[in-house]
Each structure stands twice: as C-alpha cells, then as structure tokens.
Length: 403
Image (cartoon, rainbow, N blue to C red; front, side, top):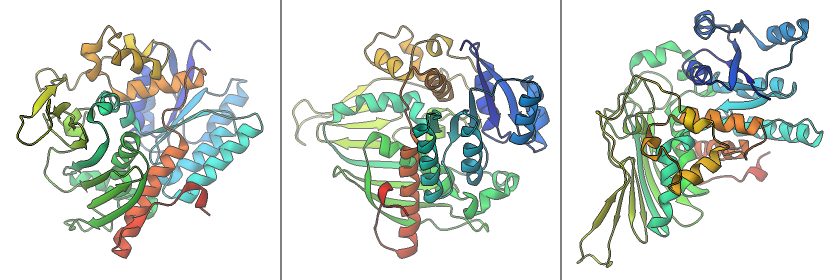
C-alpha cells in the first residue's frame, strides 16, 4: 500500500485544513472532496482532485470505472451527520477519521460503536480514529509525558475563553441550533473535557452554571464547571466564547491559523503532590525542600514567542511523518533520541494526527483516540447540560448503562 487514497467529506472550516495536510505529503493522495455546498468546487480545484456532491455519486463513479474504494475518509461535516456518513463508509470497508464530537448525542455514538463492532465480528472491521486533534498537539503530548513530575494529581485549573466574531455564527446556521450540535459547550468545551480525560483520567461528577448571555442566539455562550475525577483529583474550568481573553488553547499554542498566537501562561495549571505544571508555557514549579518557608524553584522547559512562532507559513513535518508510528515517535522524542527535538513544538497537530491515521490504515499503530474515548467526552458534555438544568452536581453515566 504505497500511496494511501483518502477522501475529505465537508468543505467548510475544518475539511480544507485536513485536505491541505494530505496534499503536502508524498505518501497519500486526495481521491476526492465530497461536498454539496458552493465551497466544494473551489476546494476541489485547489487540491486538483475529484468533486462529488454525495457518497452515492462517488460510489457510482468508482464502480462505473472499476476503481478501488478509498483507503480512508475524513468526516468533517456538521456534528449531527457524522454517524450517518460513518455507517455508509464503513459498510464499504473505508477506514474512518471522524471529526469531534463523534455525534450530537450519546445514544447515536453507542449505536455507531456497536455497528462497528458487528462489522469487526464479521471480519469486515475498519480502523476508526476520532479527531480530537489536540491529543496530538505537541504541548499536550509533552504535558502527558511530564505529568509524572508533579506526583499525584490533586487539582487542575483551566480555561478556554475568547471572543468569536459575529460572522462565525452567521456563516453556519447549525452553530446556533443545539439539536444539531451548536453552542459553545458542544463545539468547544468537548475539546477541553477530552483533554482532561486524557491527562487526568475518568470524570465522576460535574457541577455547571451557564455564563450570562450577551447574544440573541438560542445557544449557550459557555459555563463554569466544578469537576470531580474518579482518582480523587478535583478541578475548575471556565469555558466562554464571548469573552475577550488570551487564556485559551488557540491563542496559547498558535495551532489555529485563524487565531493569532499570544504568549499565554497557564490556561491549564495542574497541581500535584510534588509540584505544579503550567501549560502551555511548560513551567514546572517545585521545592527542593517542601514547605512554605522554602523558596519555589522553576524549570522552564521551552520558550515560544511571536518571533519564533512562524504563523502564516506551513512546512510539512516530513522528517517526523516518515517515521514508523505516532507512539514510537513520542517515545523517541521524550527519550532525547529525536534529532529535531528543538523543532518539535512547531509540528502541526493535524500532521501528527494524519500520520497516526495512516499508520492505523497500514496496521502499524494502536488507536490514540477511540470511539469510546469520544463517547466519554460527549457523556461529560451531556452531564454538564444536565447539571445546568437541575442546578445540582450530576454523575457522568457509564457507557454500559446507556440505553
């Protein structure tokens, strides 16, 4: 399987970003863009590929010309359409990278998980990766590796606060419809809750209160959360998309080309029994001799600023993506064996995610973010919404209890 053929479904905000990363690689090809909007022709032309308005049109073209089905598909459509597309693709044996959230509701997620399991039991299984791409952000990769320094995680403090422009909501009507996955909690908070699950562990209980609304749309603008993890760690989190603030993932890491980089400190602070880790500035605070009468020491592992952050340009991380697997790459980098370690924090998370997806298709790696992982993040979001309704702390359901 020398060249991996991929399709991108959706030519909105995220689909073209996926396509640009595929286009930069020599080991895969964009077989087609699948999109019925006015954006479709321009995006397909930009990447010199086929355009189909829907999957049936693409399948007809493939069968009429006696072609192989694509090796994989990236589903980057509105949240409420993810499961339907996934079922139609998996039936044809096409491997899946599905943008987060996996669906707009938990029961649809569980239906898809069971459907994919049935295909596997029949010997027709496909590889499925959920696009919680921030798990592949170098800052998060590094944070995950450094957590052992803090000892036992005791508490975490986090925020995702910025101001979205008005046109963001005017461009896509579904963003103002909670039944279709709209609102800040479903669109944005799901990212951070997934990272908290990834970094700290399963969440047991959440209490949430909505932030005051400033827009007229019938969707939330964010919430304040108190979180209890199953391992005993406690946390607080503020999520808001109508606040002027640099304390958010996009400003702090510079990963989104639409949001200017800002040298943010501490949009996450993880407090432990032996020290505190601040993200994305990656400062580790500790004491050689514990006790408030003793000085605080600081290890500042990395430094990133406007001069070194080359926003607006894109260089594919070919020296990284040509290596054997995402997990092997991470182990090598953390063991100081990766020759380009100084440039690691400039590698694009979509590069690492795409590299991992290709590894999965080739059978060279294990899934970094499963459908079950994505369902747990969505269950946490639904628990947030339930807490808002009841005004009380609510327990996060177990997957096996969903009916």
